[in-house]
Each structure stands twice: as structure tokens, then as C-alpha cells.
Amino acid sequence: MGEQKRIGILTSGGDCAGLNATIRAVAHRAIGTYGWEVLGVCRATHGLMSRPPQVMQFDLKNTYPLLTMGGTILGTTNKGNPFAFPMPDGTLRDRAEEIIEGYRILNLDTLIGIGGDGSLAILRKLAQQGNINLVAIPKTIDNDLGSTERSVGFDTAVNIATEALDRLHFTAASHSRVMILEVMGRDAGHIAISAGIAGGADAILIPEIPYTITNLCNALNRLHEKGRNFAIVVVAEAVCTEKGERVTQTDRLGQSRLGGIGQYLADQISTSSGAEVRVTVLGHVQRGGIPSPLDRLLGSAFGVAAVDLIANEKYDHMVSWQNRQVVSVPILDAIAQYRTVDPDDTLVKTAQAMGIYLGDRADPAPIPHTLHSKLDLLAGREIPQRQSGVVS
Image 1: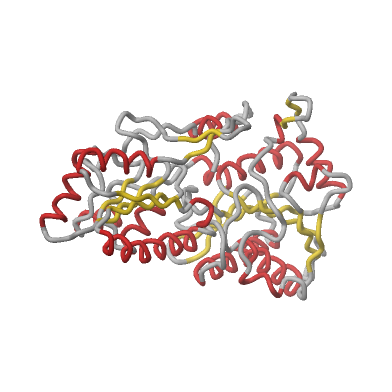
Image 2: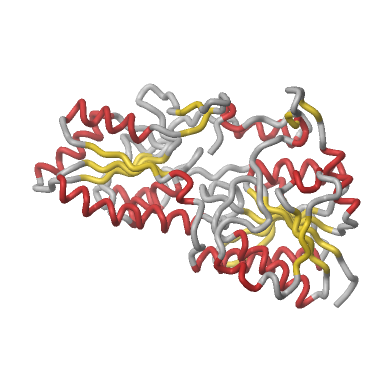
């Protein structure tokens, strides 16, 4: 079995379905095959900041129920940049060394980080600073992480959005309405276009392709002229107004969140066409629930492959799904790239061929995000706040 190892695993960023299946696979491979010890770190890097560090010990028995559980049994967080951590007195403190010390206190040989691009960028910087052996697993419902065709959580999110569309069709037809479904997609339209095609939408709006209200209404009017008394529109939350402005909502703490583009479209369509329009915002419903079979399979394959990377001492790599198999790529490559919907993508061409309104030209629309500044992070400069503080 080789050298005895003690590995830690954490989930970071937003939760999604399939995380627990991934944790389960890591434990089964590490314990069952290699005889290693597996510790789950609670609440991501916050667990490593705590004294003593907050962990749970895994064995083959307590991981048995995890396959079908949504969310993450370890807990997670998408707040509190450890390099500029907000303190109770309002100051910011660099707490990176506390996290690194927590890794040392636990006497870990390796850390497996499950996260999206932002989480993995932070974890990699911590690993480089603290000489931590890091292996990464990609998860994000937005499916926008570079160097992998699929991430844990995406398929379940698409399934939930598709089911919502299936249900909305009946209500739309019964009341002769235009129904708008607003789905997640902080910077990319993968959920919107996948669920839109699968759910029979008449129009799909994604941030990568611009649109106009006039042409959207014309597309809906053509349905009416053909005898259809209803229409279904899917829109990703990151889609901007015609003026290129993001629609956000601010809570009582001053935190800005994406949301409201569906209602904006409803008001514009109603004003322009006189149609009766209703909006459904799925929001965090897309993150939860029982993981789909594909997310369970993907999480299991990723978990096994991540442990095998450790066995081969191939650190600073992320497992990736490419061409129907699991491979590994440098974490640096994965987080330096960003995967939006390509206007020449097969799904874009499929939607257009099906007569779905998908915008006015197949050129990438400018997306007002700060992902390019991730290179600043990789160069050791200040870690950016994604979307100018907009979170999901």
C-alpha cells in the first residue's frame, strides 16, 4: 500500500449537488485501497483558522450515506478572503499563516480542495505560500471553470431548471402568458442554454450574446402569428439590460447580488407587446436537492482520480473531465482560463436551428466581470473581489 498518509479534504465556495458523493469516493479510495487516514475540514479554510482546527474523521462506515445527499456535509463558505479577512472591528487582516498553521497542526500530508475558480485560486496561493501539497477537484453549477468539460454540480442544476420549464409550460398555456425563468449563471450561460434547449424554451438569453427587446418581442410575436398562445423565455442572471447594465439587488448589509433581469425583461416585454408576463426566479433551488446520477458518477470518478494523484505525488494539479475520461491538468492552467459559452458551440447552433431566439448576432457580448484580474492573484498581487462584490 505504500507510505501511510494523512489527507485532508475541504469544500469551498458555493455548495452544489454531488459534493458529498465526491467526498465519499475520496474516503473509499484513500482508506479502502491505500489504508490512509482521511480528515474532513469543516467550513473550508475557516475550519483551518479555528483552534483547534475543525475536522471530522472519515471511515468507510460514516461515508456510506453520502452518495445521495445534497449540499456538503463539511459545510462551506464563499466569504472572507483569507488574505484580507474582515475582522469584527472593520479592519482587514491577512490570516493566511493561520490557515497554513492549521494544516501543520493536523499533520496533513496533502489537502484536497473542491471548489470553483475563485476558491481554487485562493487555495493555490495558500499552497504556494505554505508549501502545502494541494490536489483540486472542480465544482461549480455554472460549469465555467477552465480545462474541464464538466464540473460537479452542473448536471443537477440543469435538471432542476429543465424540470421547472416542464412545469411552466402548462401554466403558460393555460393562461396564455409569457413565462420567464431566471436561472443562475454568474458570468456564463451554460445552465440557461442547456436547460432552455432541453426544456423547450422559445427564447434563451445568455451573457455571451447580445439581444434587443425589439427582436425578442418580434420572435415572441411570430409564435403568436403561428397560433401559439404562450411563450417560454429562459434568461441567465448575468444578462445585462439593453444598455449593458447588470441588474442587481442590495441587501441591508450593503452586499450586492445578481437578480432581477427576469423582471426587467417582463416589464419591457409587457410594455412593448402588451403580453401578460410572469417571472419565476429559481435562485438557490438549483444548488440543492438530490444529486443527479451523472453528478454522482462524475464526483465518484473525480474523487478516485484525486486520491490516485496523491499516490503518484502529482501535486498542484486538478482532475478534469475531457473526452469522456478523467485526466489531470495544472491548477494554474485551470484557473487562468474561463469557459464561457462559445458562440460557435454546438448547443448555440442547435438552438438557432430549432428556431429559438438566442440574441442578435453570434459574436461574444462584452461581459462586465473581473475574472481577468485573476492573473493579478496568480502574480501575487491583491486578490480581486469577483463581480465588484456581486455574489450568488
